[in-house]
Length: 253
View 1 (tube, rainbow, N blue to C red):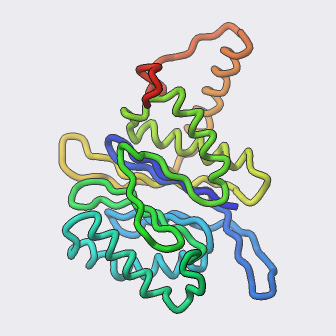
View 2: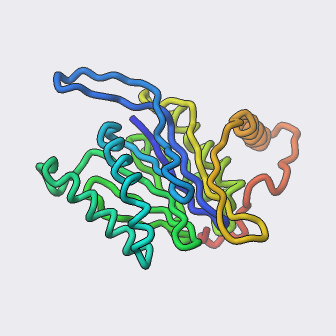
View 3: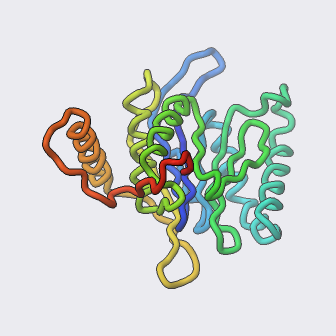
């Protein structure tokens, strides 16, 4: 199992994964190990994947070589997505025996394109899927079945129309942590997380990663404690503004 998620925020985007990969040999034997699943491809590109790690590594190397030129040549984000799709289709055409199934690997790219963040998913057939403030969340990998219901719970308590990277880092970490705890095996830490954050008072975005995870672990424990206080009627006060709260109850985000 594996899990990778992306969150599109008002001031950037966040991508997070677990660290477990499974490598299978031709005789059916498998080896599970911890390895990077998010890569700093270049200043303006975050690369993450779920699925076949060997295929993902080939794609990562190809993108590292060709993406700088494609970024320069593309006039729109849609054009860039099509160039990547065409390049990957050509690269893997001789390996695809079932065109409907495609390659057993999903690639997620966070890109700053012409000064704006783009979150793009390429699944087995390499057709680009774009995410934005209106389609702000994506999960892929076999741990998706655990991530999506938890995300639904978070949507009932948070206003994602105002989601900032500061909050998105915590929520991404919390979702991956939930999948690690809830799954039956094969999704493991440490949690990997990279993000783009819009610079204050100037153009452009910073490409960053988290190093200190204790703050997220402590915050999750604190939130769980507050939920316990409310559910079980213990004396305690919920502190405002830790997360973006919903502003209405009319069914909208």
